Amino acid sequence: MGRSLAMAAYRALSGRTAARGFVPAGPRPKGELVWLHAAEKSNLLALQDLAQRLAVARDGLNTLITLSDGDSLETARADTPRPGPVCLDVLPSEHPAAVARFLDHWSPDMCIWAWGNLHPTLMAEAHARGCPTALVDADAGGFDGRRDRWLPDLTRELLSDCVAVMARSSSAADRLANLGVRRRDIRITPPLQAGGQALPCDDTDLAETSALLAARPVWLATGVQEEEVQLILAAHRHALRYSHRLLLILHPARTEASDIMAGQAQEAGFRVSTWGGPGEPGENSQVMIAEDGEDLGLFFRLAPVSFLGSSLVSGYGGRNPFEAAALGSAVLYGPNVRRYLPFYSRLANAGAARIVKDSDTLGAAVTRLIAPDQAAAMAHAGWDVISRGAELADTVTELVEETLDTRTAHRHAPA
Image (cartoon, rainbow, N blue to C red; front, top):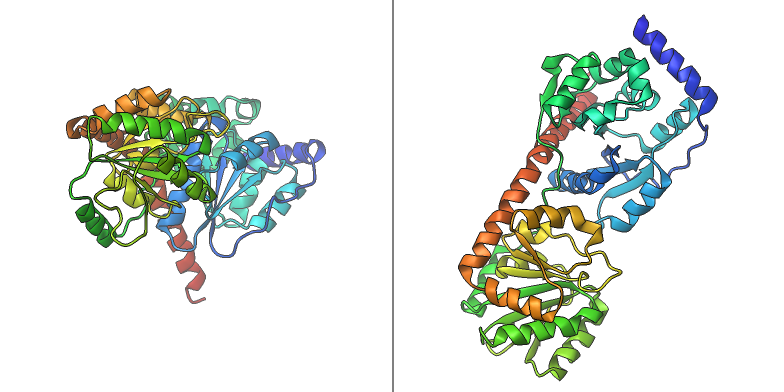
């Protein structure tokens, strides 16, 4: 009775003060859809990584990530790592009419709510419509707002309906317990962190290309902007003085720039080839141009050292370093990595990534890391970071698959 009165009081207040309208940011894709809410802005990248993992793990699965405000949505649109089955939208207000429009449009099959700052009207209505909800990465800071202080019964009611409650620390678990969540229902897990995706690679292509290289040392420069080409070529010239058989795989940020970059390398005196031609990479090639990113999974596996471009010059924000680290490639990067700064910081602190500032420092770093023991040490450190980041993501992925399988089974069960 008390919990129902608390919810009724909250809904009545929201109906008087919150905005009624909600306009979705885009159409709902066909098929299953998991909705993830990023209540903590700083962990958006980790949720984007989780969304990509979910889409890879389950065929046909779509994901929706909601943000708390329009500014956060614009940032997320600019920073979404790679096109895929991920939709972005702003959370509706707590007005019952806005909540109904949101759920009518997106019709989620499951909700993953991260951190805290619960929205009672929205979550209660989702529960009423049969949408399973899990709270993950809960933090004490996500439950210190006014509604949590004055309506603890409401928080307990919402979380008692969740299929799982996961807290990132013992202090977060204590806070949830103080709000009335049963201790046995709270699972303490590592914090949610991005773990990176292992880009695909055809085993036959890997074996054949490795044979063509005949143990030649290789380094990769990927996501390279036109303004960075001369710096990278100068670094390669420096490294060739110490390893004369060294091959640079040059992958431009824009496919249209491939011919321009090939011409620049030829003008600089390098022997240039293009990936995809018969017998490539050739024995005499010093620079091989890879026009698009379809084979990055192969190149990261071939190259013990990868420089991630769009980072030596400002205005591009860098590239996702976890794609390289997940495949055992030591990471070099420039100072302009705003978009993925938390990722680079984790790798650098672990000794898995190294910053370079110009052609001299890049060339010196490549020369040093081409030594197998040096690259292997960085690669091992990178793998440790990736593994720690993937722990909670793997747990949530299993939970999602089990929950969706159960829903599917119930839908098709005979009446």
